Amino acid sequence: MQFAAPYEGIPATLAKLYQYCHNGRSQPSVESLQSILFTILEAFGDVYIVLDALDECAERKELLKWIKDMTSWKKGKLHLLGTSRPVEDIAKYLRSLDPHHVCMMEDLVTYDIEKYIDGILHQDDAFEHWDSEVKAAIKKKLLENAGGMYVCANPKK
Image (tube, rainbow, N blue to C red; front, side, top):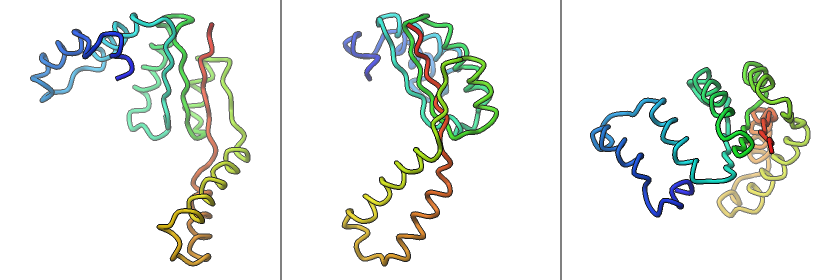
């Protein structure tokens, strides 16, 4: 919706693709979506895109290729922020694309996650009837599975 704002509605190229795909009954190709996104982004000076949880994508190779393709768009105007748990194939690939990557310290992320969990478990009325052992077990399991994050920022100016 944010990218459609300058067009005062749905961009014509996107509406045309929707019609071409039998009004949403069939899937467009990745290439056609990528082409339309590129066209839509031309209406902007700087563009910021956040890609969260890269490690949770089932089509990881395709996603990483798409990110690589995007980094050549609007040089200096497209800013990407991607987050992921520290998965080696993602980290290696993103390091090759952006020397300005940032690896967030797992301890710092874990601390923030722990504060958030404490806030939810102890302040949300939905959990007030749960005893402290159950809350501690929930917190422990969530923290075990948090595993830190890898962040790839594209700060090109």
